[in-house]
Image (cartoon, rainbow, N blue to C red; front, top):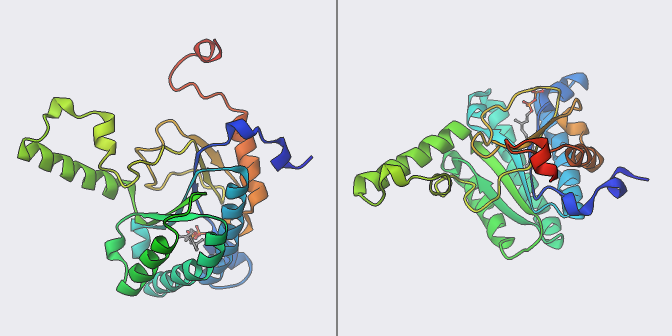
Length: 247
Ligand code: FPP
Protein backbone atom coordinates (compact mmCIF):
# COMPACT_ATOMS: atom_id res chain seq x y z
CA UNK A 1 0.00 0.00 0.00
CA UNK A 2 1.45 3.40 -0.96
CA UNK A 3 1.70 6.23 1.57
CA UNK A 4 -0.88 8.15 -0.46
CA UNK A 5 -3.36 5.27 -0.09
CA UNK A 6 -2.80 5.23 3.67
CA UNK A 7 -3.95 8.86 4.03
CA UNK A 8 -7.26 9.59 5.69
CA UNK A 9 -9.02 11.61 2.97
CA UNK A 10 -11.16 13.37 5.59
CA UNK A 11 -8.13 14.65 7.48
CA UNK A 12 -6.10 16.33 4.76
CA UNK A 13 -4.72 19.67 6.04
CA UNK A 14 -6.44 22.45 4.16
CA UNK A 15 -3.32 24.62 4.30
CA UNK A 16 0.27 23.38 4.20
CA UNK A 17 3.24 25.75 4.39
CA UNK A 18 6.76 24.72 3.40
CA UNK A 19 10.19 26.19 4.15
CA UNK A 20 12.13 24.88 1.16
CA UNK A 21 15.65 24.65 2.58
CA UNK A 22 18.89 23.02 1.54
CA UNK A 23 19.35 24.03 -2.11
CA UNK A 24 22.83 25.43 -1.49
CA UNK A 25 24.03 22.34 0.39
CA UNK A 26 22.55 20.08 -2.28
CA UNK A 27 24.49 21.97 -4.96
CA UNK A 28 27.72 21.77 -2.91
CA UNK A 29 27.27 18.01 -2.51
CA UNK A 30 27.00 17.77 -6.28
CA UNK A 31 30.11 19.92 -6.68
CA UNK A 32 28.17 22.80 -8.17
CA UNK A 33 27.31 26.47 -7.60
CA UNK A 34 24.35 27.34 -5.36
CA UNK A 35 22.06 28.23 -8.27
CA UNK A 36 22.31 24.61 -9.47
CA UNK A 37 20.52 23.66 -6.26
CA UNK A 38 17.82 26.28 -6.79
CA UNK A 39 17.31 25.01 -10.36
CA UNK A 40 16.79 21.50 -9.07
CA UNK A 41 14.53 22.91 -6.37
CA UNK A 42 12.03 23.73 -9.10
CA UNK A 43 11.55 19.99 -9.76
CA UNK A 44 10.67 19.53 -6.10
CA UNK A 45 8.18 22.43 -6.33
CA UNK A 46 6.56 20.81 -9.38
CA UNK A 47 6.19 17.44 -7.65
CA UNK A 48 4.84 18.92 -4.40
CA UNK A 49 2.28 21.12 -6.19
CA UNK A 50 1.11 18.04 -8.10
CA UNK A 51 0.92 15.96 -4.91
CA UNK A 52 -0.93 18.62 -2.95
CA UNK A 53 -3.50 18.89 -5.76
CA UNK A 54 -3.90 15.12 -5.93
CA UNK A 55 -4.86 14.75 -2.27
CA UNK A 56 -7.06 17.85 -2.09
CA UNK A 57 -4.94 20.34 -0.14
CA UNK A 58 -6.67 23.74 -0.59
CA UNK A 59 -3.75 26.13 0.07
CA UNK A 60 -0.02 25.52 -0.29
CA UNK A 61 2.37 28.30 0.78
CA UNK A 62 6.00 28.02 -0.35
CA UNK A 63 8.72 30.18 1.21
CA UNK A 64 10.64 31.00 -1.96
CA UNK A 65 12.43 34.24 -1.03
CA UNK A 66 12.65 35.87 2.38
CA UNK A 67 13.22 39.53 3.27
CA UNK A 68 16.62 38.36 4.56
CA UNK A 69 17.51 36.69 1.24
CA UNK A 70 18.08 40.15 -0.30
CA UNK A 71 21.37 40.16 1.64
CA UNK A 72 22.74 37.20 -0.36
CA UNK A 73 25.44 37.81 -2.99
CA UNK A 74 24.02 39.90 -5.85
CA UNK A 75 24.65 37.14 -8.44
CA UNK A 76 22.60 34.66 -6.41
CA UNK A 77 19.73 37.13 -5.93
CA UNK A 78 19.69 37.92 -9.66
CA UNK A 79 19.86 34.27 -10.61
CA UNK A 80 17.02 33.45 -8.21
CA UNK A 81 14.89 36.24 -9.69
CA UNK A 82 15.34 34.96 -13.24
CA UNK A 83 14.73 31.41 -12.11
CA UNK A 84 11.49 32.39 -10.38
CA UNK A 85 10.16 34.29 -13.38
CA UNK A 86 11.21 31.56 -15.77
CA UNK A 87 9.68 28.80 -13.63
CA UNK A 88 6.42 30.68 -13.09
CA UNK A 89 6.08 31.49 -16.80
CA UNK A 90 7.00 28.02 -17.91
CA UNK A 91 4.65 26.33 -15.45
CA UNK A 92 1.60 28.55 -16.06
CA UNK A 93 0.16 26.21 -18.73
CA UNK A 94 0.47 23.14 -16.51
CA UNK A 95 -0.82 25.00 -13.44
CA UNK A 96 -3.82 26.12 -15.48
CA UNK A 97 -4.47 22.59 -16.72
CA UNK A 98 -4.41 21.44 -13.09
CA UNK A 99 -6.85 24.21 -12.11
CA UNK A 100 -4.27 25.82 -9.78
CA UNK A 101 -4.73 29.44 -8.69
CA UNK A 102 -1.61 31.45 -7.94
CA UNK A 103 -1.14 34.00 -5.18
CA UNK A 104 1.73 35.87 -3.60
CA UNK A 105 2.49 37.22 -0.13
CA UNK A 106 5.36 39.53 0.71
CA UNK A 107 6.87 42.89 -0.10
CA UNK A 108 6.80 42.33 -3.88
CA UNK A 109 7.23 46.07 -4.47
CA UNK A 110 10.94 45.35 -3.89
CA UNK A 111 11.08 43.12 -6.97
CA UNK A 112 12.43 44.30 -10.32
CA UNK A 113 9.66 45.61 -12.59
CA UNK A 114 10.01 42.76 -15.07
CA UNK A 115 9.63 40.14 -12.34
CA UNK A 116 6.57 41.90 -10.91
CA UNK A 117 4.94 42.26 -14.34
CA UNK A 118 5.39 38.63 -15.25
CA UNK A 119 4.31 37.43 -11.84
CA UNK A 120 1.08 39.45 -11.84
CA UNK A 121 0.37 38.40 -15.42
CA UNK A 122 0.52 34.74 -14.34
CA UNK A 123 -1.59 35.41 -11.26
CA UNK A 124 -4.15 37.09 -13.50
CA UNK A 125 -4.16 34.24 -16.02
CA UNK A 126 -4.89 31.71 -13.28
CA UNK A 127 -7.28 33.78 -11.18
CA UNK A 128 -10.51 31.97 -12.07
CA UNK A 129 -9.14 28.51 -11.25
CA UNK A 130 -10.86 26.73 -8.39
CA UNK A 131 -8.36 24.01 -7.40
CA UNK A 132 -5.24 24.30 -5.26
CA UNK A 133 -4.33 27.85 -4.19
CA UNK A 134 -0.54 28.03 -4.58
CA UNK A 135 0.85 30.94 -2.57
CA UNK A 136 4.42 32.05 -3.13
CA UNK A 137 6.03 33.88 -0.22
CA UNK A 138 8.34 36.30 -2.01
CA UNK A 139 10.36 38.98 -0.26
CA UNK A 140 8.34 37.78 2.70
CA UNK A 141 9.18 38.08 6.38
CA UNK A 142 6.78 37.81 9.30
CA UNK A 143 8.25 40.78 11.14
CA UNK A 144 7.78 42.93 8.04
CA UNK A 145 4.19 41.67 7.71
CA UNK A 146 3.35 42.28 11.38
CA UNK A 147 4.89 45.76 11.39
CA UNK A 148 2.89 46.61 8.25
CA UNK A 149 -0.29 45.40 9.94
CA UNK A 150 0.49 47.39 13.11
CA UNK A 151 0.99 50.54 11.01
CA UNK A 152 -2.43 50.08 9.40
CA UNK A 153 -4.11 49.42 12.75
CA UNK A 154 -2.41 52.54 14.19
CA UNK A 155 -3.84 54.54 11.28
CA UNK A 156 -7.35 53.25 12.05
CA UNK A 157 -6.90 54.31 15.67
CA UNK A 158 -5.55 57.71 14.65
CA UNK A 159 -8.57 58.26 12.39
CA UNK A 160 -10.84 57.27 15.27
CA UNK A 161 -12.23 54.33 13.24
CA UNK A 162 -11.49 51.78 15.97
CA UNK A 163 -10.90 51.84 19.71
CA UNK A 164 -7.81 49.95 21.00
CA UNK A 165 -10.03 47.79 23.23
CA UNK A 166 -11.95 46.62 20.15
CA UNK A 167 -8.90 45.13 18.45
CA UNK A 168 -9.51 41.40 18.19
CA UNK A 169 -7.53 38.57 16.60
CA UNK A 170 -9.88 38.73 13.61
CA UNK A 171 -9.47 42.48 13.23
CA UNK A 172 -5.68 42.24 13.38
CA UNK A 173 -5.59 39.30 10.95
CA UNK A 174 -7.52 41.31 8.40
CA UNK A 175 -4.35 43.42 7.93
CA UNK A 176 -2.03 40.47 7.35
CA UNK A 177 -1.08 39.38 3.84
CA UNK A 178 -2.74 36.01 4.51
CA UNK A 179 -6.15 37.67 5.02
CA UNK A 180 -8.90 35.24 4.09
CA UNK A 181 -6.57 32.22 4.05
CA UNK A 182 -6.92 29.75 6.94
CA UNK A 183 -3.85 29.29 9.16
CA UNK A 184 -1.62 26.41 8.04
CA UNK A 185 -2.34 23.17 9.84
CA UNK A 186 1.00 21.73 8.84
CA UNK A 187 4.40 23.39 8.36
CA UNK A 188 7.22 21.40 6.80
CA UNK A 189 10.88 22.42 6.79
CA UNK A 190 13.43 20.43 4.85
CA UNK A 191 17.20 20.02 5.29
CA UNK A 192 17.30 19.05 8.97
CA UNK A 193 17.22 22.64 10.26
CA UNK A 194 14.93 23.28 13.22
CA UNK A 195 14.02 26.93 12.76
CA UNK A 196 11.08 29.00 11.61
CA UNK A 197 13.18 31.77 10.00
CA UNK A 198 10.64 34.60 10.18
CA UNK A 199 7.94 32.61 8.36
CA UNK A 200 4.21 33.02 9.18
CA UNK A 201 4.91 33.67 12.88
CA UNK A 202 1.37 34.83 13.65
CA UNK A 203 -0.29 32.17 11.51
CA UNK A 204 1.54 29.12 12.95
CA UNK A 205 0.36 29.58 16.55
CA UNK A 206 -1.28 26.11 16.48
CA UNK A 207 0.37 24.59 13.42
CA UNK A 208 1.91 21.12 13.53
CA UNK A 209 5.61 21.31 12.69
CA UNK A 210 7.34 18.64 10.67
CA UNK A 211 11.11 18.73 10.14
CA UNK A 212 12.47 16.57 7.37
CA UNK A 213 16.15 15.63 6.85
CA UNK A 214 16.05 15.62 3.05
CA UNK A 215 17.41 18.64 1.22
CA UNK A 216 14.75 20.49 -0.78
CA UNK A 217 15.87 19.41 -4.29
CA UNK A 218 15.40 15.76 -3.21
CA UNK A 219 11.91 16.34 -1.76
CA UNK A 220 9.03 14.82 -3.75
CA UNK A 221 5.28 14.41 -3.38
CA UNK A 222 5.81 11.06 -1.61
CA UNK A 223 7.66 12.98 1.13
CA UNK A 224 4.72 15.38 1.32
CA UNK A 225 2.37 12.41 1.77
CA UNK A 226 4.65 11.07 4.56
CA UNK A 227 4.44 14.43 6.34
CA UNK A 228 0.64 14.45 6.01
CA UNK A 229 0.51 10.90 7.41
CA UNK A 230 2.60 12.03 10.40
CA UNK A 231 0.27 15.02 10.84
CA UNK A 232 -2.75 12.70 10.83
CA UNK A 233 -1.26 10.67 13.69
CA UNK A 234 -0.91 13.72 15.93
CA UNK A 235 -3.41 14.84 18.52
CA UNK A 236 -4.18 18.54 18.11
CA UNK A 237 -5.37 19.94 21.44
CA UNK A 238 -5.32 23.72 20.88
CA UNK A 239 -4.53 24.24 24.58
CA UNK A 240 -7.26 21.85 25.78
CA UNK A 241 -6.74 18.49 27.51
CA UNK A 242 -6.63 15.19 25.69
CA UNK A 243 -9.88 14.13 27.44
CA UNK A 244 -11.68 17.25 26.23
CA UNK A 245 -10.58 16.58 22.65
CA UNK A 246 -11.68 12.94 22.75
CA UNK A 247 -15.05 13.52 24.47
C1 FPP B 1 16.71 27.81 0.50
O1 FPP B 1 17.86 27.04 0.29
C2 FPP B 1 16.01 28.08 -0.76
C3 FPP B 1 15.78 29.31 -1.29
C4 FPP B 1 16.24 30.56 -0.63
C5 FPP B 1 15.11 29.51 -2.59
C6 FPP B 1 13.97 28.60 -2.91
C7 FPP B 1 13.72 28.68 -4.34
C8 FPP B 1 13.42 27.66 -5.14
C9 FPP B 1 13.18 26.29 -4.71
C10 FPP B 1 13.35 27.99 -6.60
C11 FPP B 1 12.07 27.94 -7.27
C12 FPP B 1 10.84 28.30 -6.54
C13 FPP B 1 9.64 28.40 -7.13
C14 FPP B 1 8.49 28.71 -6.27
C15 FPP B 1 9.41 28.24 -8.57
P1 FPP B 1 19.27 27.64 0.68
O2 FPP B 1 19.82 28.34 -0.51
O3 FPP B 1 19.15 28.49 1.89
O4 FPP B 1 20.08 26.34 0.99
P2 FPP B 1 21.25 26.15 2.05
O5 FPP B 1 20.64 26.34 3.42
O6 FPP B 1 21.68 24.74 1.82
O7 FPP B 1 22.31 27.15 1.74
